[in-house]
Amino acid sequence: MRPLIPLALVMILISAATVSAASEGGVNKSVDEFADTGIDNVDSPSVFSQVEDFVISVNINESSDAVKIYATTQICVNSGLCYPPEQIEMVTEDNTTWTTTVSPMTDQTYVNWNIILENASENQTKIPETGFGWKVWSDCWNDGTGWGGEGYEGGESCDDVLVPGDPEGTVPTVGIAAVISVFVMAAIIRRH
Image 1 (cartoon, rainbow, N blue to C red):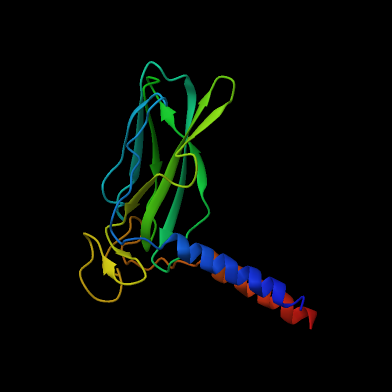
Image 2 (cartoon, rainbow, N blue to C red):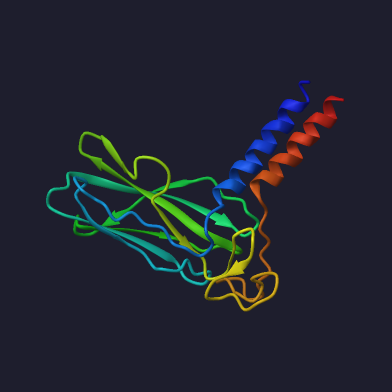
């Protein structure tokens, strides 16, 4: 019975990562209600390009008491897996417009993010309160049922989309769940 527990955990991780990728392919999502947050707007490109940095910009008004703003980003790839979320402190030059940059990666499907406002007392307000409020799809994506995007030229992959620093398009992508699965299976085999 005990050897089945690690296997069950691996299956839960794989299904959770795959489920998070499940939504209508190519349809971006955004929060547009900022009442009582001090945010005027959140701006980003409409496509998560595989050849350009993705810039997220947050504009706040005078009513905001934010002294720091964070973006929690998560990139999901065409294999159906999502990398762990990363919290990035945004930068500002005028305390009104705050920005951060997300670098593209090979085989990306979309980027999710949310915004966290922090005041001088270190109290935080997350927008939205749960989950990710924004999702922008890649220029070449697979949603589990098919391919699409501005850079998709037909076929069974996005191999023709080039990534900066990789003119041949040969950088491999390895899913974290697959790596964890290998280690768990090795531990199970070693015990026996």
